[in-house]
Image (tube, rainbow, N blue to C red; front, side, top):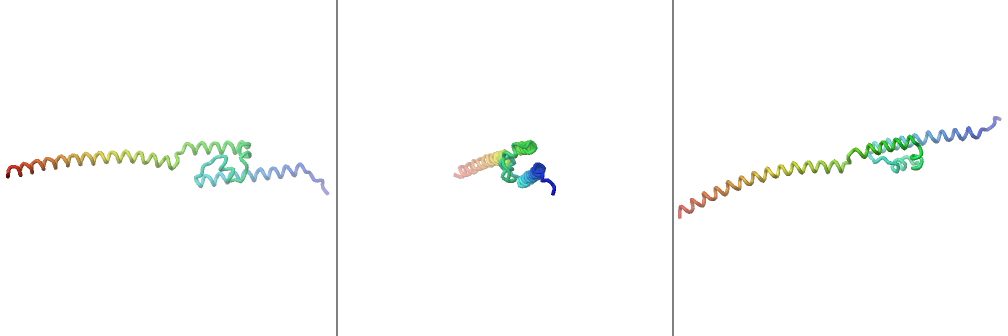
Length: 126
């Protein structure tokens, strides 16, 4: 019977576990991106079912998560987009209301002139 090499066996187990962890983290990041979820160490750790220490200690994971997190922070959130859209809508609404107000003021002025003429006609008939 061949001699059992414990260190080789442990190295093989460690390498297999490492590959499995890489796959789990990679798939978790892909799922988070598809779902438009925030990407940070907490969300990736919970999605991949690995510890945060694993993510922080692995340079590849750490740099990838930090890069994705920074990219997401630069993209405006739907709330920010909606707020910005509302602000531009406010400007358009204000301009529209100003035009309407000016039109109503002119109409009011014309009606006052017509009323003066009507009063003058009534006064002449008396």
